[in-house]
Image (cartoon, rainbow, N blue to C red; front, top):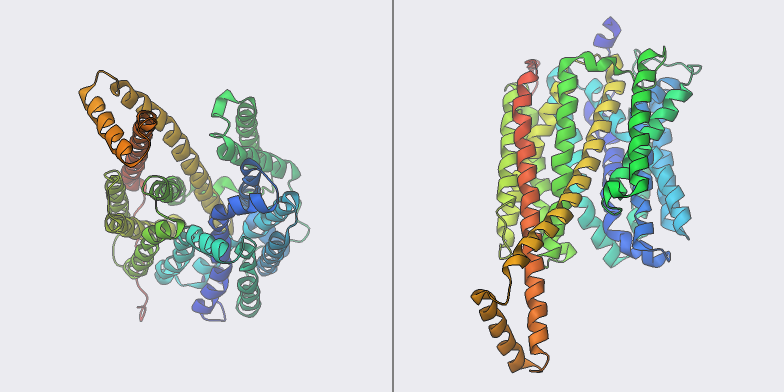
Length: 519
């Protein structure tokens, strides 16, 4: 253990941070940048919109399977060698994605891309925490959070701009120069610490890996396709749910009894890590739920273009950058639980602001709420990562970061699925309620229809005006129902953020003392 304490990397931690964050930013960006290009991909490759969604699902499934195996694979191949292989696989498969001539070819390339990208996040987080001294780990996590938080926010805007200005293929080609630069930096500045266990002949737990792949694959497909197939009314979704639950139980039991597990759950005995893993899952639900809902609200109800909605949402990234930078300096001075309480409180407040949006809202109001939301996320992510992983021994950091990032991704999938489902169901319920009050016997309805008929008759065909007026009334009801459904979702997001506050009391207090000269 002495060696693990005394070891310091030969190169500057900032050069190491730049090296690993390039790959992480590229990988996280790719989880969202392709979303807006799906209609163009479907049209170009002669696929239906439903078939094109497998471009996203295939990536997420392979990505999720690799995440928790990062520590095991690093111990077999050596972490630097494994990181280099992941960057090569991700970059090469990005080129294949851009050159794909059929949907099948693109999906296979996306599976490979997900396999290469899955390990980049946990490896980067583990390397940063090991490379910076304990008193500077807040700064390390602030650096890491910039890629994790900002990339999903910029992804849709960047993807839309590239697709409109050039082609959907360039959504994947942009990874090539970034990947090559990341490869050169990792070769130059990353090294394996002496305490990192490495065994080329370590036995592979094939049964555990099979259970894990089945569990995560079935779960991800179920979350992705659930609303599309009306959830448990679909036999396929029911089968996926049963398979996922059984495989998860078998996987956990297998990992607890085997001598050489792929994922070592004993790290969850550390209370701060267990609580932090629960909270990062909740944060994934809230963060990605908001990310999914807000652009949809702006484009479908307010009529924003993809670029305008991106401009309205992008200030979240600015807020996150600013707060992550500030909290990186405060983490060794202020109790991290206090920072987390302020962060989750601000996150709930931004959700409350979103829940008061109207159809006449100005962009400025959306921008202010977005800045607060982004600042709250940055304020949470840094102290949460530092507190959750701060007491984990260095030699177990790779295993811990794999679990931690996996649960954030699962939370993201759950959040997007829940918000999409609640939006559709709530809109139907509100539409039924509103329609019950729009009757021929309601004076307000009659007055509205008469005004619409008069306006349409004056500017068009008086014979079709009554039918057109009814169509406009129906559209107004549908739009209002959709608005109420969005507001319901934002209230749920607010509630989820508030539920996290009492959980902070479960953390043991940790406060890193700034090292002499640290600033």
